[in-house]
Length: 382
Image (cartoon, rainbow, N blue to C red):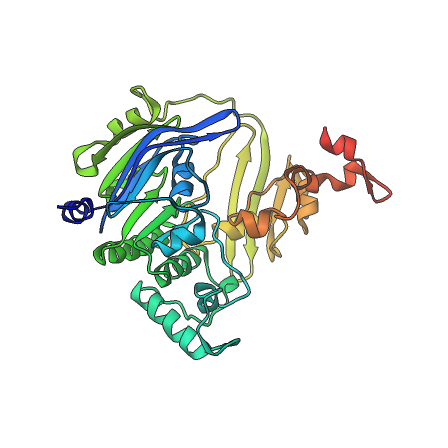
């Protein structure tokens, strides 16, 4: 019996053996093993820096391995580029989605591979029909003609999944797919994943959320410090055992109680209202305190944060900073008062992607770091 036939009979679709990856001065992966079976969801688990993303970038063609070999259906392969990986049926959905916001969902799905009537003329009728069939097959209500900019993060992920399926993906890698999703959106994503699994697609699922793993996964592989720790069926292992594999020691307390010195009141919101979004919101926050804001999708959590930061027009109510009532009509005013805001969508609302890390960090302080419109670059670097 050939090696390929042995693979097919065992259900094994892919094997990565003794994988190594060395960057200048850093051993990112050292003798790592990974096996993926058809029609299974395989969890890849590990702390930050464990090597999960590096291993998957090798599988998806973004990186070239330094050592080891990859077998696909028993055949020894060298994955030379992301395009080569896609041709082999391997697709990856990164945590930072790769979509063009002002193109439609359908145009994004077939970007660079648009069906044509004649050379150079896109057949939009066929494009949207095929795209809609892919989206409907995932069980999601997305119109293929809708611009991606008008879709939520969860819907954008579904467009990425549909794009992968349009490439006839047999292996789908999902890197932290639920990091920006609500519980309801996670449920929709899991429903789509189960449909893909039932169709025989092999899924590599990278996540830090322990509670998700047992709900969606079949097997789990743990990496630690760039090395292979072990692989288990999720039905045969406990959460505590997984944590021990990840950190290399037994944890007696995952969330130890810590005391904090609670100081004076620094923020108070009274009867805050934003037309059509918020009504009669009141709370106070003290120095050294962590205040949680909970609620279902659409309950107004994000709108409350935006209102405090001057991004929503306040209809009534008041905001007090250090016991003084303040009118916060712009983000700059909020910043001047010592208020910071980490947005839900970092890429579109929180960062200027074409600027450097240094320039992004100094953006809120441009007035302080410049004189007569000229930036003091030495002070900015400090």
